[in-house]
Length: 242
Image (cartoon, rainbow, N blue to C red):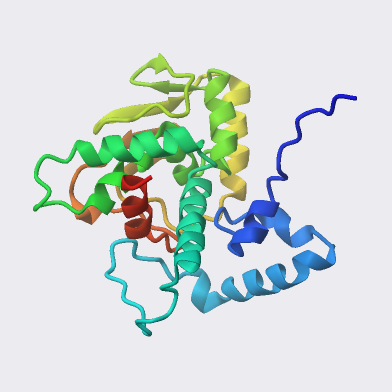
């Protein structure tokens, strides 16, 4: 008897990581016992004084105890979790794409003395079309943004784009199709969007015409804002040795 190939349940990935990295509200509706501790911890992280605290991805991080987590087993586990968290944060990217694109972004750095590798990696992934639609609130998840783009609802510089991995360049104009269903879908999402964290500075968004002007450059003043801390140094160093 042949068994169909079964994929791992999507939400169990957050349970293993113990972090709701995509801010999925559906996780709080699960009633099984294994979810209770996770829900309690996540609700604690959503308290008023923590909910509006943004995480700086470019800070210097040093452990309080030098000997903690230095075993090979713990390092391997932590590095694996950091890669998985980074991949999930950007919509669950495939392993091969994740590896090649980080290496490409690192190889594109000409003067390594003047720019942080972490900034270059973040800049690449924040330039993806599906991520931009999610950051602007036009779509409520990156996965939803990919489907929206696939069915020809999004134009870049007056031309339809059907791949969510399309990389935007500075001064690219993103628009929603004139189709009534396309614009109505985005308007309904904007009513559900809580506008926190505040849309990033590198996106000039016109919510009346549903247009986005992409302005991401090498300037550190335009760095994106995150509600979760991603150990980018760990991710990059392990990708190099992968």
